[in-house]
Length: 196
Image 1 (cartoon, rainbow, N blue to C red):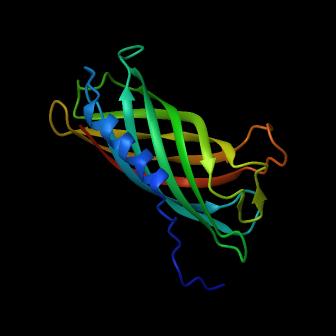
Image 2 (image 1 turned 180 degrees about the vertical axis):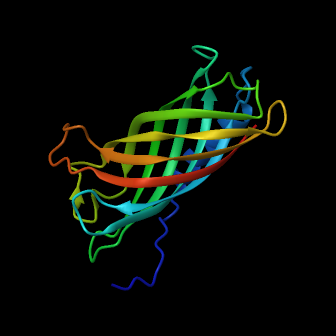
Image 3 (image 1 turned 90 degrees about the vertical axis):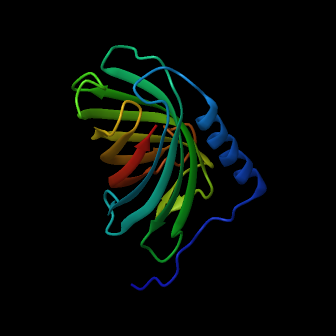
């Protein structure tokens, strides 16, 4: 199997406006916690469950708003993301996703108290699928849910600046709201982010 080209989604005016608004809100909202905003870029890869082909892709995300802590070690934020996914098959090779999710982080130690802050992470929220297929998996509509499960560590550079390294898995499905509901997965996802 040979793949020669990279596929990038067409940047429409609507997509540019949504992304610009996300960046503007990220830069202008203000709350008092260890860090207020994060931008990150990640790469995912792995075999689709029950299939012999590989799913790969890139994912860019930004935390739009971080709420006051629920507990000294439990934080919730609003996470937006844009993914470009590639299934290594002969048809339905590409899909793009645009999502908004609640992101939960449970730290082992209170953030800001140590240089390294390891955490567990879970996020869940609605996603728009630019195409209903990825590889042989089909969603019954362009609407789905994006779920992420993983963990990572934040490395403190200063009082408000950190580097965030994360690892986890991603899953897209419509939870049976539409038929069919053949979810697709990115089994191993690695990301690097900058918090400020």
